[in-house]
Image 1 (spheres, rainbow, N blue to C red):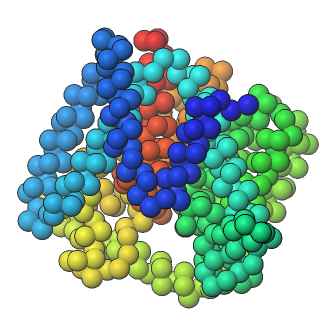
Image 2: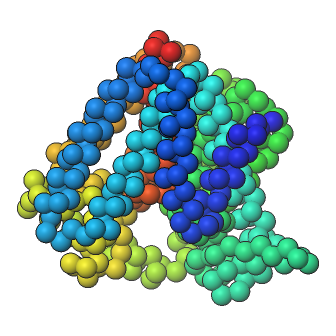
Length: 388
């Protein structure tokens, strides 16, 4: 049974998805929690002080490169400060929390039920609603549910409450893995049914990256489990069937639309790569890739790749340091884990790293970013358990 605080957090995350700019409320809520913590607890943990020092160095660097770029706009600086401040406050609050394993368990449950809510909503309207333009609608008396859709009938890509099938797939990646982790200790029928609905919803997004990531992770989870060999074989066959059906359906989608989309991405990537290669020590400032593409190069598309995006915005060397540190963190989790306690966090970090190859939700003011830095922070906490 979910606690009141978990229900409140799920509701808050849903509001972030459906209410325009509601996510901006973090800049009010997080400082309140931060100030409340400082008022109650006088001694700050050593790891938090180290993080604060590194954050100040990062902030100084971001301000330096932003103000050194001639086309920088005030809006970009404000956005940078918004992302930095809220991210810092969230990580600070999580680092100061006691009993990290309990918090991770609560985090799993929140993600799983958030994904379940989005999946049930999207799948229900898909099967019982009617299509009207770019929306699917379900009406019953005063009830009026709808979701935006992409693609063409009969292969429509659902979005649930996220307004984008790829965003829905990214959240479902997190929630499905969380569900697989929860089922290890709670084999209730409810969890299994909700997990199946989430897999159906993921397939209906027709997100190539989302489906591939989930299949790989499910294979790893099944392989490392204590299930009987026959059960594993049956699961492998089911996953193989899902891959075949999904691949066939995706190929039947409007390939012209995908070709145009991918070509625009490749053009954006090429422009960014040329800039980084020719001027590796002259970043354009954070978060200015959208402005750089649209205003200076007339490319009507986002970067859709966090690695290239950050190399363009903050420089190649800082980007390499950032991701190298992240990978070292994952390796340390793998080396130091006991009784497979870190497996969940290791796989969640892998999800984040793969997702960033085709999307750029991390290091942006987006729900996926805040989920991501929470995962990274929990990973650090698992390496500092002795300090608690």
